[in-house]
Amino acid sequence: MKTIAAALTTLLSSQHVAGFAPAAGVSRSRSISSLRMAETALSQDELKKMVGYKSVDDYVESGMVVGLGTGSTAYFAVERLGQKLKDGELKDIVAIPTSVRTKEQAESLGIPLVTLDTHSKLDVAIDGADEVDPDLNLVKGGGGALLREKMVELAADTFIVIVDESKLCDGLGPGFPIPVEITPFCHEHTIRVISDLPSCAGCKPVLRMGSSSNNKCDGDEIAVTDNGNYIVDLHFTGNIKNVPKMAADLKRVCGVVDHGIFSGMTSAVICAGNEGVTVTTPQKKDKIIFNVVVASAVATSIALIATAISRRR
Image (tube, rainbow, N blue to C red; front, top):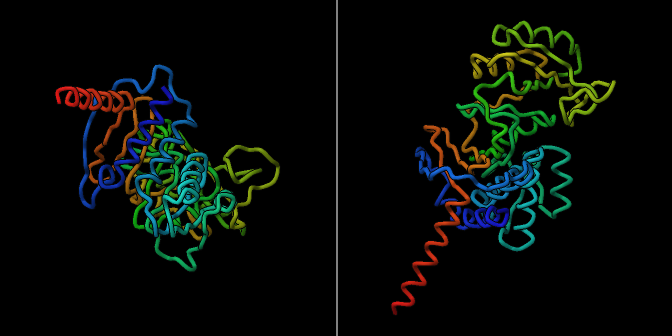
């Protein structure tokens, strides 16, 4: 069954952007019956690899400036970009990494790197997310790279989000804490101001300790980001009532550098689950649903038809 999944990745790649990427102002929608993708579910890493590879295959072309995200899913997009450059399928690509970890991975793969200082406009950015709500609002920053991610992804003409189905939620808040990057100076004061915001009512602010690359308390020292700042994670027990307002309110707090709410930025979400791969666009949040089993059956049918025609001749 994994072979079929790999075949689907190749099949989808061959369709490229014109077949599956959302056109400007248009939300394409096609539904295929939801048979099981496999008798044995694919692992989470296999699902992440599918969307990571598909994002590069469908949205990256030679000559582009590409933003490289950070995290376990974005890792596979970076890996795929390195493969296609090495094989000569892509040329004249330069990329902007969103963290030290991504920079090191890209350098190891021979991906040419630049910065926003020399390339302020990107063609596409590809990154994962910690949560995605029905309005395609995102929570990002679980890995501590939210500031660089947002700077790079806001500069991109197209922002592709890649996730597995475990990251989909009914509403932001209770499933994953909202990271907020703050200055070390008077950080306790800044945390109190944040918790007093009406739009953040009910949140429990927790200063990140240990490593900045996760929101688990794994050390005694305050976690420090690549930018030398701290992170406070806002824990909610219920859905955030007004995500865009909370995002705006946080941004206005003096002492807040930025936050992990990415609202109104998403061009498309590519999501892999055990029933297929979906591409969701923001216009009407329609879904293009692909199914490995069905795709395989279609390919088999085409082969049988071609054989029948050949025999008649």
